[in-house]
Image 1 (cartoon, rainbow, N blue to C red):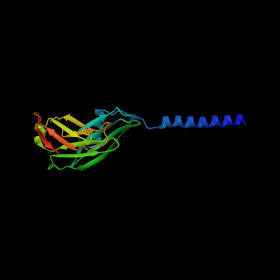
Image 2: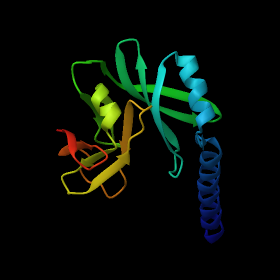
Image 3: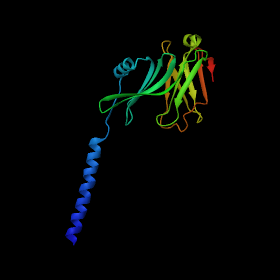
Image 4: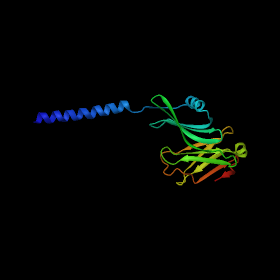
Length: 179
């Protein structure tokens, strides 16, 4: 009877090990993204690449891509899973050049906020963009006259990734846009 008990335990342990090992070898494998892959995908998807943010320091590396496609602007997520590029157009809105700045973003999963700038004055004079969150934490990026879109990504300390304030400042620190 004791011998039968040990056989049963051995069989159960063997089944658990087989399941664990097979699960390890059959799970999706994510590969880091890079600028070359982003450019390749933008050509394949036939959109104008406005900006991107590569996030390779996570378990499932990805890139967020801000783009323009005809009269629509959006953000998509690029991953490389099992050696294959996967691009998903996550959020897309109609471009409205009457608005000085348009924003879109996601509050959960991998939260982000993308700003699309439509104002020549902001292109010319804007030097920094800052966004402030409900927890009073601020992210700031330097502006580049060649970039029309900026992507801000949440870090793990953000509990609520919805900005309470967006401001753009000129070279002297004067606010030229605030929302």
